[in-house]
Image (cartoon, rainbow, N blue to C red):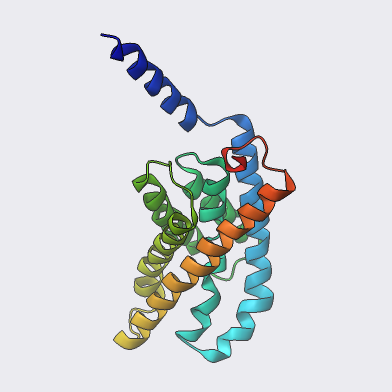
Length: 199
């Protein structure tokens, strides 16, 4: 019978760790808005310079678009953070004038969901570089599952595979490892003291 209080205590602690605080919502929203602005800049001043390379090579830097889906969960460590951050960033991108229009929202959803699944697989208890890399790759898989049928349905199989491969690789490296390094750098500054990422 003595194990019952301990079990109840464990359940309470688990529920508390997944409960969103106001500061969590505000910070994830702020991260997402910041990345939404980055998306606009990236689309207008970086992506256009790679277009002449053609498919699939321009997608070597596409990982930037899924960074909110990795960075936000690494900081607040709450279920839904990846999807929330990526969707808000997509909305900001649309408002600022994304050349992909409202389809940006669908893209943001599947990218956020891809990362969410990977963090969820660990029950939001593991946040090391390997998990970050896999979460980035998951977001890249979501990106590919959206982009290939929507934008490249008539492309050759080789081009489709090339785009999907580069999206996953770029997301794993740029968003996964890059996002983990970014959060690590922020932790060193002390700005994450009120978040689990500071531990």
